[in-house]
Image 1 (cartoon, rainbow, N blue to C red):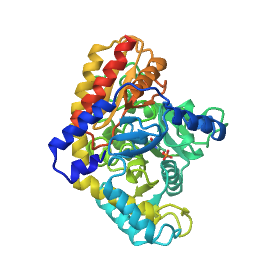
Image 2 (cartoon, helix red, strand yellow):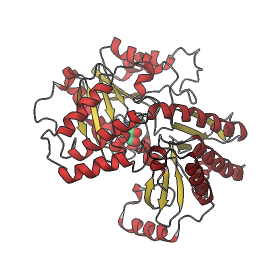
Image 3 (tube, protein in one colour):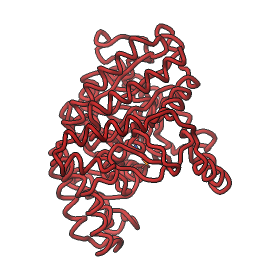
Length: 460
Ligand SMILES: Cc1ncc(COP(=O)(O)O)c(C=O)c1O
């Protein structure tokens, strides 16, 4: 099903309707895993560590736009975007063409500049907040946060980094050391010294049992007192996500990030915003920092930047990057011509298809439809989101808010059996991760709601 062609080449409302009916027919209940998936899953169990996968038992074969086909021929509506990666939709023709053409020309030349890399850095500087005038390209999100932390320590000459409970910045040792959850640190021994962790602006589960807006950003105001008790006086950096993804799509209250920016600036601290997940249109703006006009000294990008071709970046102020000498920071694959060409095409597609705005409009519709489920089901404790990143928190009951991971898992499994692919996040593993590619349409959201409703009604 060539949905992209339907969308961008043929102005065919009628044809699209037919395809939707076709999709509706294919979203019938099916057995998961199918026989081919089962065989491959068994081989995966034999040859791959079990730590690699915690997903529904499906083996993807190919995907197009918002539709996934597994190796057994089952079709799924994708509400995962991988893990918030394929923002432009799977195998977007323009993206594929850019990768194909580049693959034929040049794929790697280590840290020699290439036209693609230089153009990408320039284009990113153009669209990033005005104070950001340099970009360092890398491959994974963890590499980007790791690099930002290292550079910030060098520049500030201070080793302590403030981060937040629930935070996730990647799985290497630097990011792990500022992670705010045991899931990232369990039994890995001492983290790097200098990590200070304070509560995030999590109003659904406020660490101080306060209510917004009466609290007047108490969680930020109290930070000085917390730091006094655990800092050695060497704090130089703050790292934060605009919303916490892995912690369960936790969105701080309006104005919280601005308060944090001001708090950091008043204390001469470097603010790193980790937009590995929240960027490239996901929240309804190209970058989430745009919502409150935040100007971090450093910003980390990943996931949607390459939309499937591993690409990440650290944007920062020139004076900060200048603390590193030539040859001190390079990477074998960072900024390679292939990933640079892919990311350039992502930027073009974002603009041509106005994807951030589309995510905002469809996201509002989807959020309102999901709120119908919140009203209907006592175990739906909270529905929250911005643009096309929405969390459905599953609890025992609305008042008690006790997290229930089992029900969450069951809903996700049943949805997959009905043809809707979802993921799971949360400190307690009890949040349904709703994050379709940004090209999703209202009609496809309706299909997803119907399936979610069907799965949830079986729990009641
Ligand atoms: C906010 C944030 N930072 C960093 C990372 C790490 O990215 P990667 O898995 O590409 O290393 C993630 C991944 O989920 C993330 O959500």
